[in-house]
Amino acid sequence: MADPRRPRRLVPPRDLAALIARRHAALRAHVRGARRGQVEGVHQARVASRRLREVAPVLGRGLDEVRLKPLRRRLRDLTRALGPVRELDVAGQMLAERDWQGRDAQRLRRAWLRDLARRRREPVSDLRAALSPHQVAVLATELEAFEAVRAASGDLTWRTTLARRLADRARDLRDRIVRTGALYHPEPLHEVRIATKKLRYALEMTAEAGLVRLTRPLARLKAAQDVLGRLHDLDVLLTLLHDLPEAAPGEDLQHEAARVVAALETESAQLHAAYLRSASALTRIADDTLDRIAPRVRGPVPGRIRRPDGR
Image 1 (cartoon, one colour):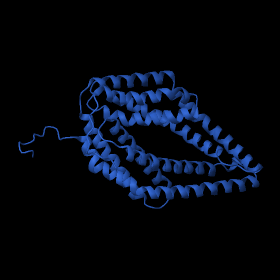
Image 2 (tube, one colour; image 1 turned 45 degrees about the horizontal axis):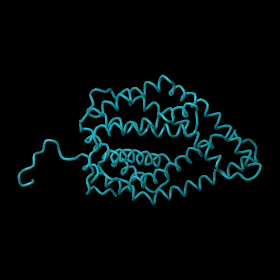
Image 3 (cartoon, helix red, strand yellow; image 1 turned 90 degrees about the vertical axis):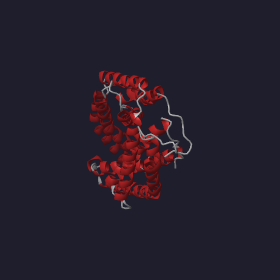
Image 4 (cartoon, one colour; image 1 turned 135 degrees about the vertical axis):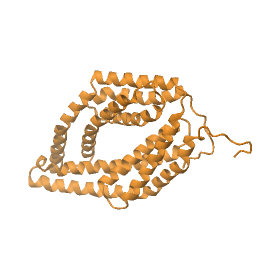
């Protein structure tokens, strides 16, 4: 867990701006690849857009000189445009990486990959429109303005906003873990995954801002997110495969398809068991965030005057 006993020096405003700039640079580095529909470019651009979406409402607090609503809406739309392409890319990768033994298995693999490639064309076209040179230039201008205003501001109300966000994220994760319980339900487990990711991104911001050391909880959140992410990807793939009987015509291929689906379902059960083993650790991180990290981020209550006796 985080050890808040040793305080860290709060970073100056220019370094808070650098926190925005690093995420902007990560997005900029992968925009061209994402526009071309490259698998890694799509993935990294989506991660960068999500991290920027976490930063904008926090570090934008108290900055009257910059309009954040258009920026946040643009980042949200970008994430949404990247999402469908990313899901199909992951499904294709999971099929491609499997060990396909025998002629029927190879025929099935080719049939499914062809169908996924066909389904990918429309969302890739939508993504290219969202990442047009004009859209990218407007987004870059808005992010650069955000960085500049943040660098020039000494306003500290962002800490209160971050503390509130941390508490909200922690409560959401804890509540979703409790509601999901030990049964296997894809949608509630997906919500646990999203809550884990959001808390992780908020804690990353906390650590980068120099407020708390969080190496261990961030590593644990990342590990749990990876397990839940793989589980979600399998659920998406299984749904796609159940919807594609016509992509694998013939009785021989249907038998092979049933075998592959059974193997994927077995892997899902194993990943669910791994998540259940990590659930208590995730709950402890959420509780620690509520009990110690968020209050430390918030800092002293503004305007409170200490008495001479220290009370």
